[in-house]
Image 1 (tube, helix red, strand yellow):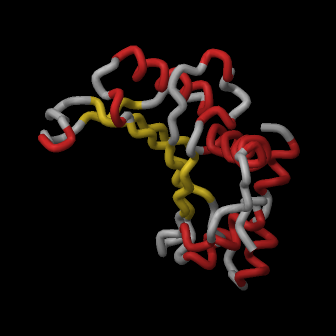
Image 2 (cartoon, rainbow, N blue to C red):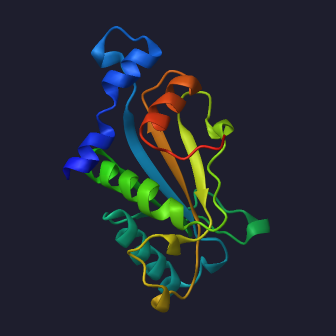
Length: 178
């Protein structure tokens, strides 16, 4: 990990001061980042699923897991055992490098981006955001893209409430709306 990335994530002293937390180990930190992509209408096209899997592995640096349906739902034309999505869980160094690329490179490339709402927190200090098109990441070559897909990113923290999670991410340069 580069020095600039390490400096970005050494926010525990400032966070402890802001939240008035006396013990160093009680300071919130990011525990994992989970990326979920739904397959949707292309659930029967294995080549398209492999292309999405390849693009997600380029973005995250880790191979995604194909999630299968647990039961049949006739109205969605889904049978049991059919692929319905892809999932990647990032931890430690891979997580920090992905967070750095997400905040500093990918988010500024989003068209008409004004920041994320503070209300996106789940009540326990975790935030889930949606990315509409995966081509905002520089690892993806726009010329080779056949299907543009979106995905959800969940940033799980060890915070006890939304205020602590918000303070943590704000110190880590996460773009929030004013």
